[in-house]
Image (cartoon, rainbow, N blue to C red; front, top):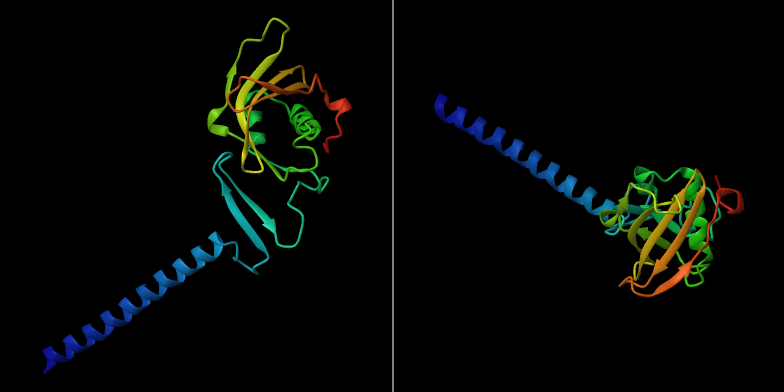
Length: 186
């Protein structure tokens, strides 16, 4: 009798632990799905993973996308800040963002400009004009791909050159833009 009572207690205790583990797993799975669907917290946000920039873009429902406190008509620049790792200054980053707003197909109609962070290449030696450059691709509104060549020198000068996705046809040249003549928010 003592042995059967011990078995019964072990069976009951095991069942309680098993139900607790199942409840924990179900709870974790449903909260993970809510976050993926953008319904975490109060349900006011949506998010998506941008495979180009490797960033998660979060927006509030019914509101303009987050632009860092700047102009709400400016696009989201995803992955652009990774250029800081390649010698671009924050002033040059501001000028680059301004240059994108000057390119007609992206001006006013772009909601997101994503830099292909896995595709960034640079030459640490300056060109004959003393400028450094970065090569990559950008994807506009998650569909239009452009090859990017960004020249930079000093602390604020940049020149954005965009090509078609094959890199064969030049579509845009911003000319030299410095932080002093861009309307960046910095």
